[in-house]
Amino acid sequence: MIHFDLASRPKVISTHINCLNKDYLIESLSTSTINRELKTYINDNLYEIITGTPDVIQKLNTRFKRLKSYSESKIVLGKIRAIFNYEKFGSKSVRLYDAYDLANNLDVRTCLYCNRMYTITVVKGTKRDEKVTRPQFDHFFDKAKNPLLALSIYNLIPSCTICNSSLKGKKEFTLSGYMHPYIDNYINQYSYKFIPHNVSSILGQKSNLEVEIDIKALSLIDGVKIKKTSDIFKLSAVMSGHSEELKDLFDIRYKFSQRYFMELFSTYKKLGLSYEEVYRIVFGVHFIEDNFNQRPFSKLKKDLLKELNIIT
Image (cartoon, rainbow, N blue to C red; front, side, top):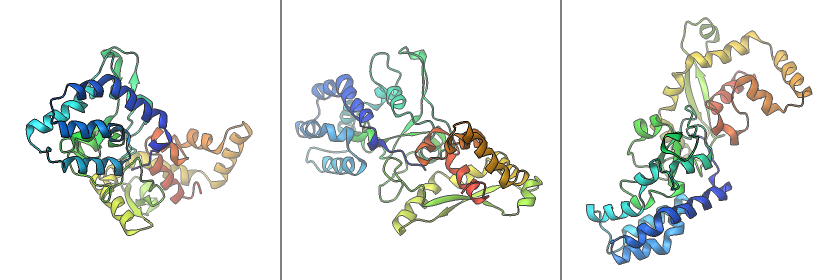
């Protein structure tokens, strides 16, 4: 449930549309036997279908479904899927632009929904067996019901298997009801807190550390979106499952004085390191919010470190 500013990466977006056109879309669209009205609509709006922001592609999809020739028959949906062939894009292609290329270009290293699991992309070459691993791509708007948007870059969210397949699955997401990682930057409108607040019990290993989400949204709508999204991905529960690792933060806080940390940061500063660099070395996560997608638990640990008054 962290933000990734896709709009600030125009090269990634332009590469996506250019490569899809060259390797997939121009040929699949020209050879498709789909109704002329639907083909013309797709052809006229192809660039925005692939590169448009979530609100734009949602409107395009709605207008598309209102065309007289559109129906949700297996034949029509099958022809749309054949044009926007996500299965082919998602496979390990030897010569074509594929999901590995997009994942590599995005360089999102943790799941944008939970910020708990690594989603690194490992590609050693162009051969199939050299494409080792990549994140799953969640379709914010379900591709089964919205095949027109199967390859839309703003509809492809790098995520872990648990969030994408086990928790979200085919649940229908809307822009008004759920957070969209590419456009909704609510990182400061909610925070993780620990429970219970009986620190001695936690340090004595007699109590598990549980985590809850404190929502401080600026509006009711934002609050609802944060709540519904965190509930879908069961963020409080899954973060609480890492209590053993989180207890380390309590050990650090209560076995070392605040003065110790001030001196530590001061010493590293003399070596020419920035606060962010020292923070990453000491706690293993990122301090700057734009970099949260690079290390698991960056949001969670920063919130708990603030609550423990280790950082400000």
